[in-house]
Amino acid sequence: MSLSSLPDLAILVKLIAYCELAEKYAPRRNDLTGAASTRKTVEMTYLPVPSPPDEPLSSVMRTLRMKVREENSYVGSNLHQISGRVYGGQVFAQAVVAARATVANQYASREIHSITAAFLRPGDLDVPTQFDVEEILDGRSFSTRRVHASQHGKTIFTARASFQEIQPGVEHEERMPHAPDPKTLESSVTLFASIDHPAARVMSSTNAIDMRHVGGSIWMKPAEPSDDPVLIWFKLRNRMPEDASQLLHRAILAYSSDQFMLEPIMRRHGMHWTNPKLSLATLDHAIWWHRDINMSEWVLAELTSPSAQGGRGLSLAKFFQDGRHVATMAQEGMVRSRD
Image (cartoon, rainbow, N blue to C red; front, side, top):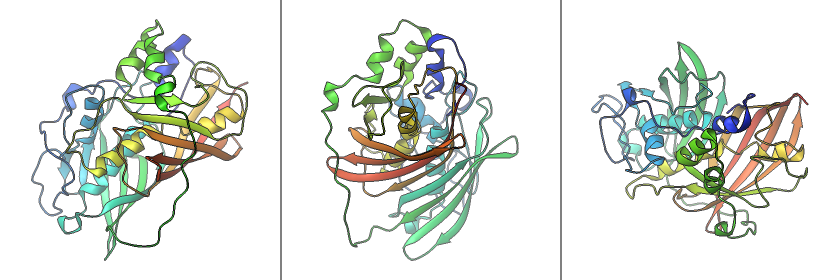
């Protein structure tokens, strides 16, 4: 995601894309997810994604219920943003779902375990995004897909996704860091609701994720510069449907994480989100899912930044739930300040 100079709190709206979906691209089906589509015959108009009744999750899920254009080709709608640009986390999540849709039924037990993506151009909110998937490999244990997202005939995003059979093997994991109970920390939803400004009200009503920073947030003002790990609790404000697949929970993690992955870079340099002189954008993003995750429950992110240079910064994140190390991420982003 990127920021530009806007008065007062209006800049907050550009942090996260959470507004209602354009009605002209609304889906027509209400199906369960998890079952892979066949690769030879298109049997449905939209990918099978459940439709939760409550906002703001309902709008996010509608972006994942993409229209089947032809074999291995899908069209996804966009969540509205005042910035006029598509939120990167939305495209990331859509790529996860599109890639999985091309894995044949005989490999239905394979879960996505990694995706590496590059964000090449800003997306136009007024144009649906086309996702074309290339089948690279269906081996004995792994399936590999390449995803290209395009608008106006140009690629805006590309990714490689890998799926694996559930298999036994050696196992170890990082320990979950100690953190206060998220119920004792300030909620991003409550914070935005307390501010009498149209942009803050939009954030409060359309933000699908509740984020709670250990040690305080940097939404409104900077914190003392620090290289300590950043700890953030987060989860969906609405519960996922009970029949939602693990694929969708993993896609929602991809959707959520693009909102805060660059924070350790910002904190090391005394930056904050509402600084009008700050310009941020995701360049590339990789996720490795280690274990199942439930986005209806609290997830703890531990973020660090090993390096920043040349207007770019690298962030690393480990994600924990119920004491287990469930995922790891790396993101490089553009981080520029006119100060």
